[in-house]
Amino acid sequence: MARKAADANDSRERMIEAAISLMRGSGLSGAGINEVVRESGAPKGSVYYFFPEGKLSLAAEALAVYTQRVCGFIDAALSSRKAPEEKVRALFAAFARRVEEAGYLRSCAVGAVSLDLDADVVRLQPVLAGACTRWVDCIAAHFDLGDAKRTRSFASLVLTSIEGAYVRCRAERSRKPFTEAGEWLSALAAG
Amino acid sequence: MARKAADANDSRERMIEAAISLMRGSGLSGAGINEVVRESGAPKGSVYYFFPEGKLSLAAEALAVYTQRVCGFIDAALSSRKAPEEKVRALFAAFARRVEEAGYLRSCAVGAVSLDLDADVVRLQPVLAGACTRWVDCIAAHFDLGDAKRTRSFASLVLTSIEGAYVRCRAERSRKPFTEAGEWLSALAAG
Image 1 (tube, rainbow over the protein chains, first blue to last red):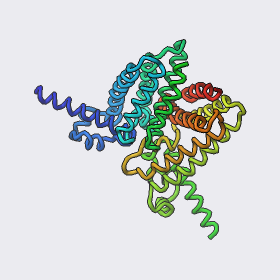
Image 2: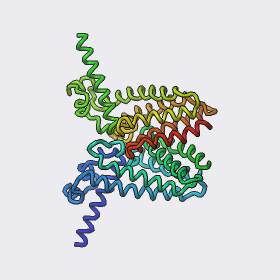
Image 3: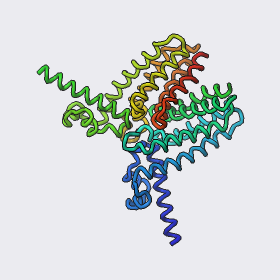
């Protein structure tokens, strides 16, 4: 029984990881049940067993896991340096490496799903908005630009630039949009 | 005959417009032949008549039309003001209005398709990269930040921020990512 429960948890986890990877690749359209089954190797029935509401409930949970994981990634990059301008450069360099290592075929799951939003998937919108808020909080906690409002606004610009650089890196097969934005924003962080 | 040719041209144009609108809505995945036929009202056979290679050749042509049109949009917004900081604000405000008027359900066709890129649609990648280059050129022509390299790099940051703000606006159902980025970047443009 314990073994069976462990296997089940393992299947569930693999489905979530598959959904994250597929959403990073091509948004919600790439993360259909058939694709998740193929990518995860889990039996098709088990997707509906774990996610009775299907694709959107799996996507919502995968986005929550992903959001938390990216917070950790952001924290690690920003904690690796002391000076604000160095923090910004380190963050953008970390994202540049990430996109390059994935052959420019993976970007932000939240960004990719956001650009797929339509009336049918509108229930994912609060999940995506929540992810953005969480990441802005997470970035803002590492900076002090004089007052809280300005710091938060700067953190928000950092997130906007990351999402935009992810778009352009895919199109241009280049890490330059990240390093370039990192340079400009590090000048802003330095005041 | 002339009437028939005019009708044919009209069908072709409607298919391209439908593809642009659908790609702005949910990227390449939303712009399949069936969707284009439904949205344009054109007969299904005519898609293959005009675009014998199907979806990707229609998408490539639609993206070319869209790229040119957005250049016009950027030029108009940037030409509406004299001072560099005002130009930047006007550009971001114009995009903010655009996304708001579309109920936060349409963003940049190039951005949305970029986040859908995979091995099957890799032939669209140069089209997307070309659009980015064209837009950076188009923005850079309106500014002078001392030297050509710095001006171009700033224009590139403007494009990155627009693409990122488009992502976030969809997720957050808010124009704020545009107005906020506009404020920060106008400060940079003012030197």
